[in-house]
Length: 401
Ligand SMILES: Cc1cc2nc3c(=O)[nH]c(=O)nc-3n(C[C@H](O)[C@H](O)[C@H](O)COP(=O)(O)OP(=O)(O)OC[C@H]3O[C@@H](n4cnc5c(N)ncnc54)[C@H](O)[C@@H]3O)c2cc1C
Image: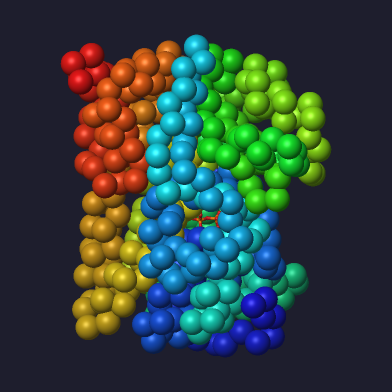
């Protein structure tokens, strides 16, 4: 881990840029598949990543696929319910396989697994721009401090997360602005750990067009935050103010801040959602993870789909050894487009962030309908077709279920 630029080779099969969940997942599978992989990140690892740290079922499945689930769960705080809380105080506990582990640890585990599989990790090393031959990417210009180097690669995989500079430099950004923003802090409150052992997601008018969360981490620490996605072209809301509203109006959040110890400052970060905002590929280059918009709207969850899209990038590249570049790109893009219906559902559900009374309505109905509760659990663990739950037609149907 953290090799220096002086050890950088001149060429490799695949250069993976960004060692978050998407990049490390891709790097591990590519290395396991026999590719010579260079993985780089602009930050030396371990590094923090501003996040809610919640692992929903898609993340668990991907962690299994990468062979790191045991390592993650030996440190994570497991949980068995997402508690949805509406503005009128209605509560609904949706069962699922869940866990919380701060990203500093999660990302290190996934990155170390890539390293163990044979991917060489160089950091801090920044991707500046692609090297192009005609329209084809054949490598990248990289920088560490004042030193710049060129690295030739058969493929470049961009997994640079929600910030736009690398996408812009590679000519892949269709949109510079993020889809949303979120803010989080860590609060230590060991007494609350005895009775708050679910992932709470809260909708209230004072948080609109967004949501709040409290997720229990290991060691009596809680990740508490607020976020907002797709605020319709308006200026991004002042998340500090939204956070203050959350900790004033939601009793557990109030209790946490009043009796706990805030560990470090609150931190905000952008989100790129809905599988849009970037081209997915060009000759010699694939875009994966949040750089490709792989984070869900509505709740801002994206670790699982970042891992999953990274896995798809690796599988498309490995399957493409005997095929041409166009076939690899077509395969990869088809894999991502197949995920689109799930993103559409979360985009529709995002209406509840703008109109929190919709959360009340769904919670109220689901508390009275076992079938609807099952459907929501099936959407969360992705065992059921997402359907049209949050369209106008779907909402009207709530009264007949
Ligand atoms: C406040 C907040 C709360 C969230 N809560 C949750 C949650 O509870 N659960 C959940 O599933 N998701 C959550 N998300 C979303 C989640 O953080 C992202 O979906 C996830 O991190 C995306 O993974 P990734 O690998 O695509 O990108 P990242 O994790 O962002 O990794 C990208 C990496 O690329 C590196 N990089 C960027 N540019 C360059 C460059 N030019 N050169 C070299 N390296 C570069 C970065 O340093 C970084 O390490 C939250 C997001 C925010 C902002």
